[in-house]
Image 1 (cartoon, one colour):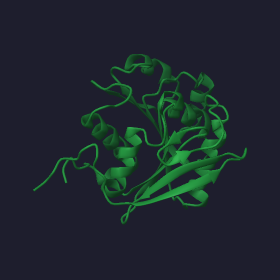
Image 2 (spheres, rainbow, N blue to C red):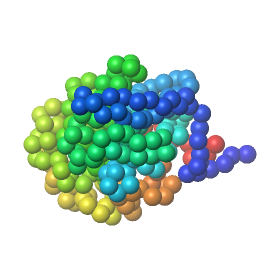
Image 3 (tube, rainbow, N blue to C red):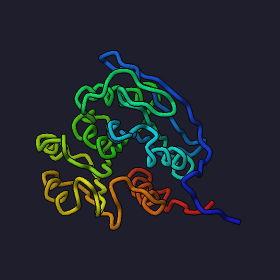
Length: 236
């Protein structure tokens, strides 16, 4: 007898806590959730703004770590940026509004390649995390960006122009009822990036609350980085 996937569903994976050190000496905490078998790719998660409660356990990322290693063979790497606290602990340093966090992003990318030996690395940002991705995840080893609820409050046109000229894939999932940037305005703002795949999600809000929206986000991520593993199951 099958059961539906629930918010509390945790599927098998190899889950390992880690710490890393940034170039400016901060110690960040995180967790790797790796598939037991049949790996496909690796996804580094940049969380929402800690001033609003964002952290490595923000619910989309926690559910990605609980499900995607088993469902899609994706290794999920989550961490707390400087000064951010989650159940796993607190990263050192102080929140800097996305400026000094450039060191956090680069240290996490280096960790994925140098320690975890990633063969392929995608980056997903959510809200504030999209700003970090657009501004600071320019490492040429990164395969591409996935942006959830991008507010475009800190990223400037010059940051968008970088990705336009760079040419790597950039996908943005924009909720119909977003608090900061709705689909029509997002189309205008992101028009600087010719290769943008902008997906307006009907009925969704900035925080993607509700299992149908969680499933949609995780399915879109999988479509981009591990398409052979679609469709994601809704029952066990």
